[in-house]
Image 1 (cartoon, chains in turn purple, brown):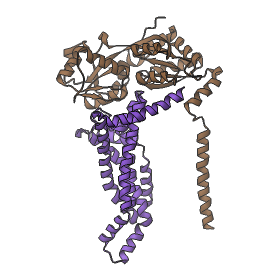
Image 2 (cartoon, one colour; image 1 turned 135 degrees about the horizontal axis):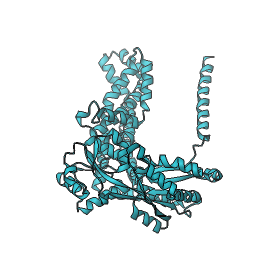
Image 3 (cartoon, one colour; image 1 turned 30 degrees about the horizontal axis):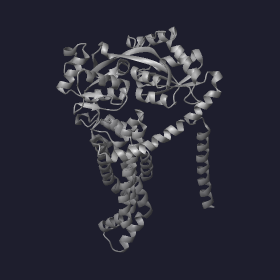
Image 4 (cartoon, chains in turn red, yellow; image 1 turned 120 degrees about the vertical axis):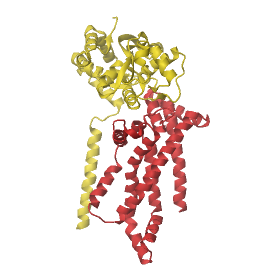
Length: 235
Length: 295
């Protein structure tokens, strides 16, 4: 009995997903747009910080590099709730940056997600650079490139790796719920994104709408990945 | 030689992971369905019972206080799933819980009428309070006194920040009823619909210096960490009745009917009722829940 019931919930969810998308429900679009803008902004910031640092660690040798890399790998698996909690404590009213009034705003969500995915992008770029970086750089040098040109060559040759780092980072950002729930607060019309909506609907027992939003989330990820995949192939 | 040693190392590592995985899987980390089956076999020793209840009973510490004593008396171990009243009823409807302890009387009566539960009993009540920043920018405490409708009216007119549970819970329903009584459709920049549990909403009210409707117990259990005060209390409209319902055992064969019955009898008994009245007196100087079973 129950098994059938739960599966029918999922079918209902699928139907409802299509309904949600085509009914042009203002609230749903607002949620989707906020999800995208927050996660894309966080991915952008993290890429700008993470990718160059990843390359730098990959090609340069310096003291304590090994311990730094190990720390980096650890940071890659930081639980979103912890990232969220730390950011919350820093920006909350009684925290050191409380005066900025950032708590429960989209900006806070962007900060939390950036903290979460910068190490991921950095780590993946570092891995790609470590394997091929010095080789490409040496090749550039033999062909008579200046160090600036060698750097450009490096970025061009590593673009596939950097892109997949960005895609992975985005995927993690858009799908996490723990951090944005804590720093954003899931306020309707202000900071409610797809994942917090899903968590909330689940807690309200509205499983089919939760599944519907989940399907929308997957559909959007598919779209974004397709676009990035296209870039990757074309390059 | 060297590659051999490396292979050996990799193999050891793989072996360690496999062992960890096997241990992890064989330990009682089984799916809830299996859990219920295990409970059946262990019923002579009391077995266990799944209770779906609201966040307010869990967050306030009432269950942590009552359940060990229930176990002492009956040997039954109660597993608590604390969610909003909406989801608690849904869990009962799906047969995922054995007994419900919730506070939305009309929804509970519908639940029993629809055949999802056997019978509903009054257990106890607590009350809602309007909480807000201790500096009280709208001077609600002075101007509204005990009148919750006047307080809501003033918040609406002055567009004071108000945080709503927004999660279809019993507390949320009570709040919506209060808005309806003064013919206000709560929406706008001043009204934050949060969709989270009571503890989180109180925490957020503290953070944004807003007003909120809370049950007394959850607020009191968090009071020390907050700069929030009770601004309105004691209005009869703020009364919050809890009921207990055994889930219809015909839902599936895993429902612990005897356990549910034992719990209901226990909590409605003189001992259960006295314990409810006792709870909170030491820590807060007042009862958080007032027993009112009429058995």
